[in-house]
Image (cartoon, rainbow, N blue to C red; front, side, top):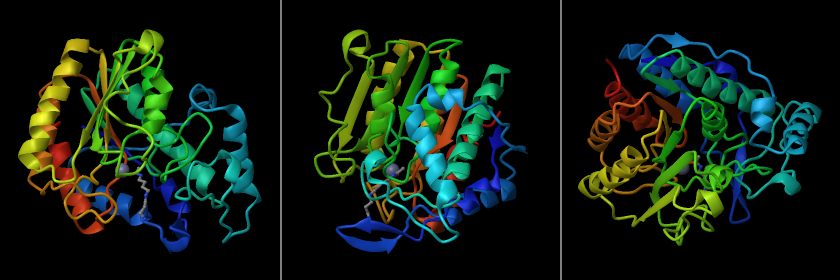
Length: 316
Ligand code: Q9C
Ligand code: ZN
C-alpha cells in the first residue's frame, strides 16, 4: 500500500496544552509521526510518497474561510517561540497555534488529498500519515489537537466521485467530522468511541445522534464503556461494518486513532496490542477502496508497532 508522508509536521510542536488550568506537556508530539514512519520503513509497508499541493478551496469547502485565514495569519504573526490561544476560533485548550501550525496543518490536508487522488487512480489502499490530526476540527473551530479536518476534507473531495463512508475508530468521538456531514445522505459517518458522558469531547457522540434532515440515519454513534476489551470491541466493530456494507459506498475512509490502546496516556479502552491486526483484518475484509487517515494514539513506545500491525492487513 502507498503511504503519504512529509516531515512538514515537525514545524508544529506546541510546548504545552492547558488541562484543568495547568500547563501540561503536549501529548500530540512530532515523535508520534516519527515512530510510525520509522516502523513503516523497517517493515517495508509501502512506498512512501510526498503529498502534492492542493488548492485552499478544498479546505474551505469544510472550514469557514475566515477561520482558515485567521489560522494562517496567527501562525505568521507569532515570534519563533510564540504560542497563541486565539479564543474565538477555539473549542478547548488543546489546540494552541504556533508559528508552524498553519503550514503543518495544511501539509496534513495535502497528505489526505493526495491519498484521495491515489484512490481515484485505482489504488486499493492508501495510508495518509497526517499530523496534526483532524477529526475534532469543525467548521470554524480548532480543538483536541486538530486544526483542519483531514478526513472530512478528503471525504468531501471524494464525494464528487461517489458515496463515501467514514469509519472513525479513534478513542474520541470525531465531533468535527460528524458536524461536517450531519445533514448529508451521501457520506455515512460511523464512529466507535469512549462514552462521551465521561470522555472528551463530552458534548457529542451519543447514540441518539443519528443525523438531521436528509442526513437522518447517516450518522451512527457507538459509545463504549472504558472496560471494552479486544473481544467486545471486535464484536461491536463487526456490527458497525455491517452498516457500511449496507450503505455500499464507493470509497471508505478510516479515521484511524490508536488511543484505544490500554496503555494510552490520554485515552485507553482495554485493547491489547493483539487487537490492531484483527481490527485491520475486519476492515480490510470489506474489500473497498480504502484510505486510512492517521488521527490519535499517544503511547509513543507502542504506536509504531500497533499502527504497523493494522496497516499490514491492507497489503496485497
Ligand atoms: N490532558 C485526538 O485524539 N484531552 N485528540 C486531553 C488530557 C484532549 C484528543 C486531556 C484529547 C484530544 C485526535
Ligand atoms: Zn483521540
